[in-house]
Length: 280
Image 1 (cartoon, rainbow, N blue to C red):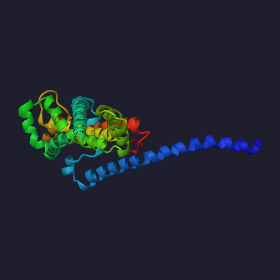
Image 2 (image 1 turned 90 degrees about the horizontal axis):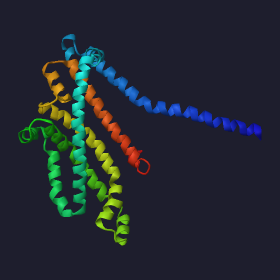
Image 3 (image 1 turned 180 degrees about the vertical axis):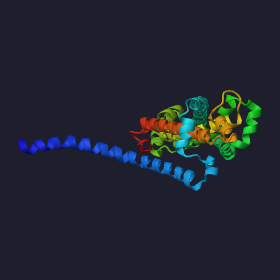
């Protein structure tokens, strides 16, 4: 009996040690391969498809790194501008989250409010922001406030739409159970509707986070008063044909967007990952 049981106790730890690295490799391999393919395609376009006289249109990765990202002076300027853009994006996302959830809750509590307000939310999404930017500048100036408003205009619609959808998608049996218990409107909202809508709210915030970064960059490009953001640098680099600096700034802005998206993905897993499929 001892000789049979001993190998069994030894095999389990070995399996755990072997399976975990395999799972990690399986999870990391696709993004690593896709990143390598993207760099390869970048080199192919820059070094093969573009001639030397046109290579300034898309400098190769090593040139971007050597000329911009490895230059501490240029990198410091870009990081400071990115910090300004990040502050605007976070402010715009916070305002969008508060207003979006509040508007969705109001619409869910009264059909007349939904019929009046929701068409304006759709119109807000349909109108190109670039067409409204000149009016925003005339009304609110050309500083940080105008940049934040651009973020809100871009990011608020998914929060309104998905929060309203989550509240209205509560199970009918649970609604009837609260009705039998004579729950008040506030009690029903706080104890049933908002918890049930939490997966939709978190998904909308994850979507709106990327849109807020885009709105902050657009605001930087059009509202140049105050400290320059990363969008301001992008516009300056484009005008001066500084291709290496332009691509480096784009990469930093994209990296910031990915980090914000990853942050809200982690927040979604922490809040709803244990009981809802959207957070797994």
